[in-house]
Image (cartoon, rainbow, N blue to C red):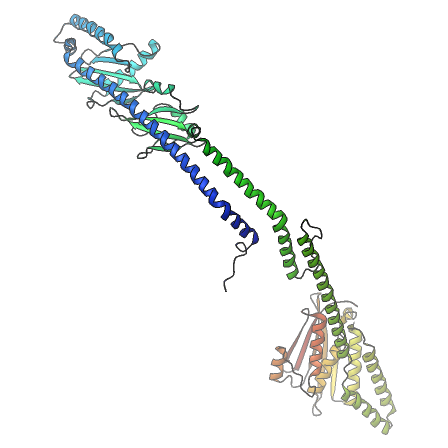
Length: 573
């Protein structure tokens, strides 16, 4: 079954979704209406200014066309231009008189062409340049413009396309230039491009809005620093308008001239356009803002009163699931229902903790009883056989052996009955095992020998009682034969300052293969008759006392017989 993601299944998400389902459609309608209103205003303003640009560009084109006709008529009808054709055909005095008459003609007609800065006549035969002087603020400015026009004509004398004005980018200003070439005579006119946008300075484009002229590559010829500073892109081609600007958006409109490769642009700040929005739009904006505030306040209140207590409860339950029984919820709360819920939860946790403690103590008591029972298990055959040996020795009146046997049995049972703790010192366990082996030697003289090696520095280490003795007893029981003596060795060593290793080994035939596999796989070997109860006893007690801190390993070493190795953590009594 597919699990639902916690985020989408949370109360906060569902509450937010429910509130948004109620308020969301209204907000969406208002936002769409707002954007629609802005779009309508933009289109209206763009259309209005587009028409204005079209009208003004048409007026510019008509003025340029009138100048074109004037220049064409001047080049065809003025007889004084004939003296400009060649120096060889006319006297120089005649040229000067013609130049004077032509100058008077140009200046007398200059007032009729106010849209033009200057009309000029240039002859390459005399390298003479004649122009009107009604433009510019001083003589230096007029000479600078005259030199730039003259330099252009001298370096690029090819005729212009009829009716087409060319953009000339000068050092300090840009010009619209047009001329007619008739052999060696150039009749033309120019206008400073900045002069073309002077009428737009009287229009209300806002504080930062303006008009500008750009070439066919959409590079501004006027107001270029302003365009670069504001990051306005004027290179759009097909749309009626575009919105551009880094810090403040501008509505950008354009109109192309039919008389030259240049565009007239209008840049209107959007803030100026939005001032024209109706009062309803402002009301909608205020309502959207209030709705968002209300939604935020509602979610804050719901989180404070409803969601936060539930989150605390969920957090406490997660901690409880991880076993933390000390977690508690605040008893006081602003809501009666949550106060009752928190109090009930805390009471439940307290009862669970008490119940768990009681169960844990009961389990410990059970383990203590089990350990005590395991420690008090005595092999009845060993006890009866030992008494029977004493009886037989008394019959033959071997009092010295009877005394030794009785002493060893007394020490043996004294250790058994006083071992009421879970641990004994290693040296005490070794002495008890040595005593047990002496009893067995008295029972079976010349049938086995034994060696015990244990470092003195480990004498105070604590180990479970009867562990070594049980392993030795198991060796005698399964490896002992009357045909050939066996050797039993007990070796205790220290490993890495953390563990002690107890190795019990005999020289018998070793563990049967199936028994060895069962021992290594922790399978139960105890039979109905109680066979191998000693090994099960050891493994059970080690598990109860050490959990995973110990291990016991069974093996058969070639040429030596059964080997049992127990690793225990070093702990000092």
